[in-house]
Length: 218
Image 1 (cartoon, rainbow, N blue to C red):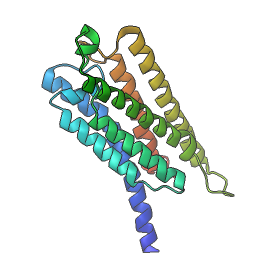
Image 2 (cartoon, helix red, strand yellow; image 1 turned 45 degrees about the vertical axis):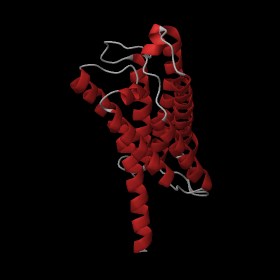
Image 3 (cartoon, helix red, strand yellow; image 1 turned 180 degrees about the vertical axis):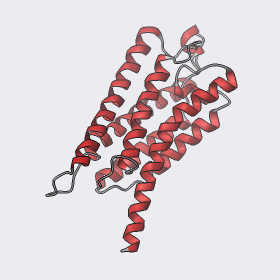
């Protein structure tokens, strides 16, 4: 029994660790960027090209490894965690273009263009799987066991987080197409950075709730 309890605690701790890292990443990069460069990057991915590269890559690797270590209750949870983790590593290893090339028309090397496409594809898969966790996996209940009132509240949070993730992805595409949202800016909250942050914060909150840090059954 003690061994089973330890496993439960370790799973809850893993979920909380994933969640709190997601909640802290946008703030760490935003504050760090203001301290280092007195500027906020147009997107979270652009921090790869700053002095905060190690923090950006380190966070993504840690979150990705934790996701790949996640087992959940069914094989679906296991494989979604692995796919999300691998795509997160893809986001970290293959950088987006710096932004100047896209905004000034400078020539882009074939390697940089390829890396940027892999980066975007990995990011799309990463956030899509996080939304699947929110909508389809976290909302499950044990067969034959009616959900508790707090479980129903948690499900509302999960679905809300999933909606925010998907909505943020749509807005990122819209902003990017309308005004080249990845170009350098003097704004303290560039639109692409803002919507990416919303998606990551929603991801973090869903995992913190799943880790039973809040909204636990009494």
